[in-house]
Amino acid sequence: MYDGLRLAFFRLAAKGWVPPQWFEPNLPPVASRAAKTGHLSLEVVSHCWNYSHFLAYQLSSLVLFPPHNLSVTMTVFYCPEDEQTERLLAFFSEQSVPGVTWNWQPLPRQQLFRRGIGRNKAALETHADWVWFTDCDLMFREGCLDVLAEQLQNRQSALVFPREERCTDLLAEDNPMLKAGTGEPQVLDIDTSSFTSKFPSKATGPLQIAHGDVCRAVGYCRNIDLYQQPTEQFAKCHEDRAFRWLIRSQGEPLPIPGVYRIRHIAKGRYTGSKANTGVRTALRRLQSWLRDRA
Image (cartoon, rainbow, N blue to C red; front, side, top):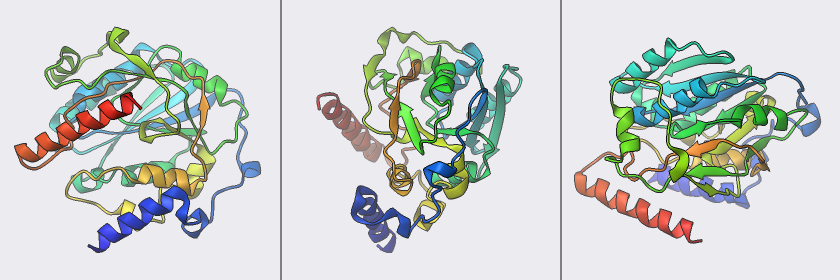
C-alpha cells in the first residue's frame, strides 16, 4: 500500500504538481552544458527481456546503416537467464561495425525489470555527448544517426526527440516480421512498406535523447528510490514521465529521419495466468485504437 501511495504521488508530481527541484536540485543550467560541435558521441541505452526477436532488428539496423558522423556505443541491459538474448548478443559481438561499439550489461532479473535502474546506471556512467534512452523494438535506419549528429551540433538542450517515427500496426506474435527474428541469430533487414508516420508530442520512453552533461549530473530519477528498487515483475515505466519532470523538459522535436518502431500486441514482460495476459493484451489493443483515432 505504501508503494502504491508513493507511486500515485510521483505520478501527480510528474504532472507538475510538485516543484522538480525538491527531488533534483542539481540540474546543470543551460550555460554550463557543453555545446559540442564536430564529431559527436552517442550512447544508445536499451533493455531486453524475452524480446530478442525485436532486438535483432535494432542491432541489425546499426550494422546495415552504420553512422559516419557519429560514434555510437550501443548499450543493452539484459539478464543471462534470457538465453535467446544472450545468444543474440554473442552473435552481434562478432560483427565489426565502423563507428559502433557494443556494450552488453548483464543485470539480475529483478533489476532488469525496473528499467529506471539500468537507465540510471548508464546515465551516471556515460562518457558520451548525448544519450538516447530507447526500447529494443526501435530501429535506426538510413540517415537517422548522421542527421541526428547534424541536429545536435552546438546544442545545449536537456532533451530532444525525433519529430516523426514510423510505426507498424500492433502485430501478433505469428506475424512473419516477428517470427523472422526467432530463429538463429542473424543480421535482419525489414520491409518498411507496412510502417506509417506518427508524430509524438513529447520525448516518450523510447525517444528520449538527453544531453550527456545532464545525464552525468542527475542520472535517471536517481533520487526517487521507488524507481530504483528491484522488482519481481517488469514494472510499468512511470519513471519516463518523472525523468522529463526532473529535467524540466518535455523535449524539443527535431527532424530526424529513419526512426522505425515495431508495435506488437503481446508484451514479452507480461507474467501471470493466460487469462490475465489476455486481458492486458485486449486493453493494449483498445488503447492503441483510441490513440490512433485521437
